[in-house]
Image (tube, rainbow, N blue to C red):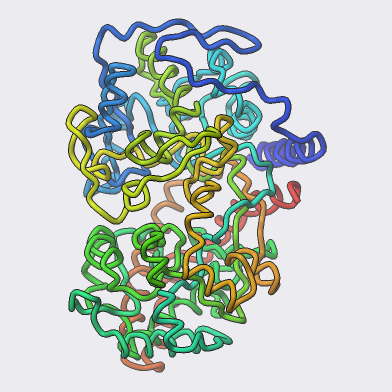
Length: 585
């Protein structure tokens, strides 16, 4: 076992080093959108033509989905018209019992026609014979083949995969290179409404204590939103918790660490237990406790879910602290920017931001074909997957439809329409002939991509990420951004952090991780329940004394359940990630 792991790590290191020396992208086969059923030629073969005469329903077992059922609306209509396929999405995280669903379908020998699962689960599924080898045909698909190096690397580091075999396709790949970071925002940082922050005089904040005071002043000045609904500085949700309190884990990057199961991985390549008092999990949990002591935490936090927070609070300006950059999309628009209401980075002097580079190698999930798929279905699935990697497919996944979400400029670049700018914050009605319903309801419910939005569109020269289109950047030069730049002397938060030495970018490597044994899985489940329950209770502790006692009691309980063994297991597992990162730097 140990020998195989060392070989895997050597393969990772060798490949990463070779990639850095030889470069990538210039010699890639260019992608073409093509038409459904047309041949797609690449060096090494030709994809077979596929008949679309028969309607085909594909079952997708999808760890990323927040929706379960048939994909309908505008995206569903496009897939029906182009490929005569329907997608039936099976979503573990909304099923009510994700583990039971996974075990039941695995035991039946058919997880799905397509599966989107975590890296570690792919190894288990491969070992159980649930995933099909597509190594003999994947080279026949021009657009998938653009990412051959990344796909081959991931498969070469799985146990039991012979040379030339392909079981897994990483999610969210791009061609930018192993250490590139092209975004204008980091994943996690404190962000507040500019109008409220500027109203307070943009007070300097040395640490999170100062941030809490600013939030307190903000909430005192604006106890409700414009509609008169009660507003709070911070609103939390429980339904994303998995092994710890997820809202806390999402803030650990502020102080140089990423929470990974029972450990914290630092942007200095260190690993420590999640329960280390010097670590970022304790620090940010205490931050939420302090916020609650100051009356800044939404009292619904312990009982509401993500959808409630998103739809009824974030989109209504009833929450004053955002942290993850995708939250900006629920409020920030050019119109709100001109009225000085957009959320912006609020600089805190002692931050040491942990930021992964762009996911060149993919992220923590992979796609695969179910082993029970027959030959006809296999050909149609492969055609579909290849199309997902085309400019047409990627534009639809990451943006939407022409003339509804964007228009094409004379130079071939794109510009968001008014509805495009507001697609995440307003109800955009889609014409019946294009699928009907609301745009957001008909958006791609698979919620995961083979190629990420940080890939460049060869047709436009822009990234697929609409926030990075030249037209969007220009449009977003609003009163908010201009005033923020004048105040802080940087064009965006990334440049500000770089100038202040606050940004620690680490290579975003993607390797298979060892799965849990039965004993480790039991320890992880039991310890996870303790950490989640204790963390939530600590947020609402009555005093510093009670908070610290709860922390100590949690650690004592964890020790009795085998926490040290779990930390040792995870430390060894993620050491492979550290070694791969070091090879990529």
